[in-house]
Amino acid sequence: MQDPASEIEEFNRLKPNLQRIWADLQADPSYKHTSVIVPSLSVDQEELAKVTGASFYEERLMFALIRLRSRNARVIYLTSQPVHPEIVDYYLQMLEGVPVNHARQRLLMMSVYDGSSRPLTEKILERPRLIARLRNSLGDAARAYLTCYNSTVLERRLAVELGIPLNGVDPSLLHFGTKSGSREIFAAANVNLPLGYENLQSEDDIVGALSDLAIQRPGLKRAVVKLDEGFSGEGNGLFTYPAELSDAAIRTELQNLKWSSGTETYRSFLRKYAAMGGIVEEMIEADEVRSPSVQMRIHPDGVSVLVSSHEQVLGGSTGQVYLGCRFPANEEYRLDLQEQAKRIGAALSERGVIGRFGIDFLVSRKDGEEWASHAIEINLRMGGTTPPYHALEFLTGGRLESESGLFRTLGSDDKYYSATDNLKSPSYHGLLPEDLFEIITRHGLGYRHATGTGVLFYMIGAVSQYGKLGMTAIGNSPSQSQELFDRTVSVLDAECEGGHGVPAPLFDRYITME
Image (cartoon, rainbow, N blue to C red; front, side):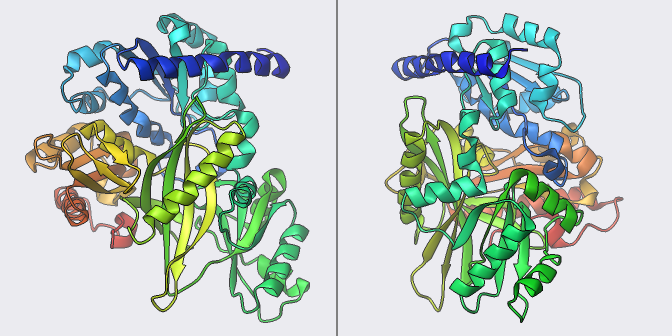
């Protein structure tokens, strides 16, 4: 293992290779290259443990097999546990115009056979023989790059070990993806954000911030205390102000923070807060409150581009856990959010950030007034809205029109979808991938290229053990995509409930896109 200074030096030396590969691909889409995909969830493992079936989230990047559309593209995909062969075939047969055998010859699936609850990248780095095999499988390393779910020092080390550039944010810039760093970028981009305080570290800091918020927002009823590196809404504590606004009363009430996870405790939360830092900000409340998001991407050449917008569906006990999304965001505020996202993208690009990232917003209004927007956080990584949008690209070959924020196929048809990575029911337990595919086929739920509509599933490996999977229902209108979504859930429920007892309550099983 190299010392940190020499590792960083080598990492920076490899960076220009990514820019060159990107330029060559733009000039010639058939450019011969290799993409190494390591969908490691290199995040706080204590927070990740709160997510059911987290290990199978490594399958969410299977849509990256879209790269095999190019006849000279090769993909190496690594996972902690082997992916069922029928799941791999399920994606390959969706590549319209590409024979499955041709795509399979250019795909190498590799596994570390380690189901422990640690980041995949860490497991790979522990296996020098595997790294050697990876190097030998790259072909021309000068034409290869590494893609990950998120970037940390682990991914930087793996890129250096393989001698290829990382297609993602430099770990030295990760601060901009924390809750505190997000607020700093929003201010720099002149984007509206909730009143709050960042770069906090202790209980005293939290009490002081909550007290100051109450002074600046007379009548404020609730606030949110967030870990800097929490994700999917986990790590957010909801605070309700006491009748008395003294520091002592606030400190006492702080012990009654409410979390989405039933396993979190106040002391545990404070310990993580001291380790990673966090923020306190006002809770935006109004007659109507929605949670849209915008995906962006900064190319290796520094150009920031719009990827998509979504209406996020949140749930859990505090209403802050990501459950699913609808594409696109509501037209009443979509263009405004896109414009704000472009300013945020420019601010990040100026600071050297590259790769995909998402920006979460809250929009609210009272008594039918105009919508007001607040930027909430930047996720410098792929997120929950990445897989469904990848699915749309994967299946249609279309693109987003930045002027309207709508997705158009090559035939100029608009596409919409409803998606979730949290479709679950106790009755789904024991459902094998083969069973799911048989149900899909028998009920005609699969995506059809002829109509440009249908359902694509992901995280399929999680269904047998956890009764959970993800899906994207694609339609030619918002109502059609929702109808497909609802019909699919009804079919799965009807197929699986027999002999498996009473299904869980509706809210626990799946999300509705109202």
